[in-house]
Length: 221
Image (cartoon, rainbow, N blue to C red; front, side, top):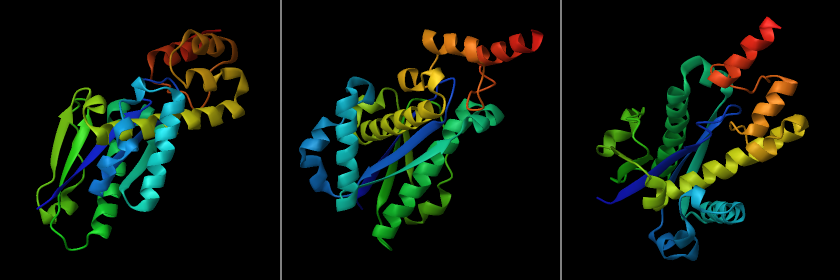
């Protein structure tokens, strides 16, 4: 029985504002591993913005050809505040994995194909995959720095980074004074300064200490 590896990674975990975004990614056709695009896949942090965008576009074209499949899921700041970032991250990953498993099964109905889920990090997540295990046990393996060690996780990391950055750049058009196109919602000095000047938005994570302190300070004034 052949095995398909599904790589999973997220972007936005440490941000003060905006969603956490997770992608699940799988290689469907072995020919993809021989392509120049496959060779370019790496940890998104090791690539320039131009390189990430080029690889992301290439992966979308490979999806159209049926060489790969992937899915994105996002969880907003309100859910992060309600359940905590670790659970919000798990929810996003779980949704992305579920949809990729559905895609893989729809392309190979009735075939016994093993699956392995490769997750970046070591958070010991549990995913709702029992319904997909009728064809065999689905293994889950965690790998620290997996985005630089496994192409499927690296691809997920690139797609997650590009997707979230694009989302934050769109939010910058709604809130031009906040500079989201520059800091992408992370805790930079620029972000802290504009928060002090203009206040907290609905897309900020209210349970994060820096945001919580700003809210408490504003109430005291």
